[in-house]
Image (cartoon, rainbow, N blue to C red; front, side):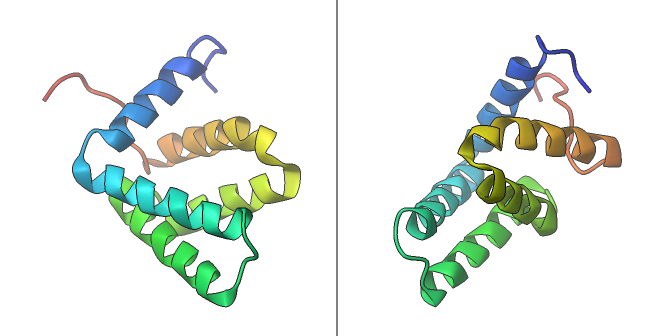
Length: 108
């Protein structure tokens, strides 16, 4: 587990990595819109299907397993939105240890 002072740096790196390319930025936008569709409105079967497709596309774009993203979503919806940061940090640490996410390696 990273030190508490390293958590904001990891979060910032992760966020900038997501928005660095048009493909991942578009996936994040579609996923966010789908998430808002099921959380702010009544979750109809169509909205749930759109959310699952957007989640699968996001998972493929950021190279994180679909099940891992869905487990974070399930955890957040059960415990509340305030736990999103800690859940994401925990999952990121597990993905890094399992080789699912890459650490920054400077400019390419």
